Image (tube, rainbow, N blue to C red):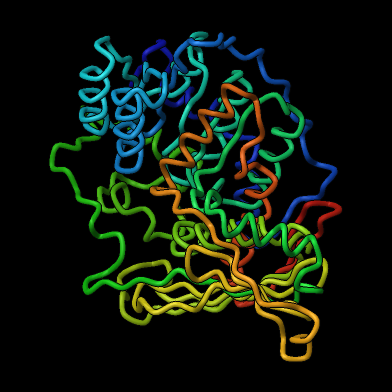
Length: 440
């Protein structure tokens, strides 16, 4: 039997690694939900590693594959240019070839050895690490983020926050029980000033009652989405990849490099368009519309129009009702690139958000009462750079990030219930009092 770095068998490791939400994940896939009374109380995080003024922020990266390696290069470049004082000291991935490029970049930049391990828990055991960035597949986000928080680490978790709704509620409650921990979801469009200005206008009553919003993420390809993730012939589950560890609490299947490289195409491992693409647009809109409350009813339709080999849908349309009665419609496609204009409608005026700015235009009935105005918003450059740096800033200042766990959980209500709606052909409801979902 395979032995891990600490002498523990892989079977034992996976048994202990089964997340408290694994049962909830199974229920989620069957369309059932748990009762609120079964929630386990959140744990208490270990005291975080002190960060003195002038000290470098010491980071560990979980999942230095495609996106993870991109994050590594960005952090290294910040340090090399003197923009941020940080060090990447550890990398964890179940696939050894995945960390080769990241390890080389880190050691060239920081002039010191970088720990590499297949077992991410080895990173969390280190007392000298302040924060971890999680860029693993969706089905590992909740478990790894939970373990990191309990280990006293600040967390940047790639989007979507989790794979299933129940996991996101648990993670949100854990963050609320440990407010000293900095937790940020990797939805970088939250940094665009137009959404922050829209939130101010809405809460100031500038558009009257918010009635209806819309957004989309649409793109196209000739051969199919996510096929640009290559399959490395060096991958070998017998020598350099722990396939059982990658599976985690997912379906126990034989080694499949297609699923490993392109998991976003498969329903057991990803919500596809919804969780990978639409969260970019939905998250800042949900933040701007904080005043309308939680999503309470979600219905979605989807199709396999062009990419029929992909298990997840290549065209989706979602309708979301919020506590106030506000309605949001969302369109997603990987077979047509023409989306809809991002905007928020109100009883008295509308907010247009298609460009960099936030433009308010009154409804015809209110043109004599409300002046049209354009809130000029700065060009912030690369919004992902700004988002990463915001996390680093919050680690130093202990401020609350924009893309926090509550916003992430609201978005996961939409993501998870829309996904269930697609596959089960039913509308779903969410109860903000019990934090549970059910068929409508």
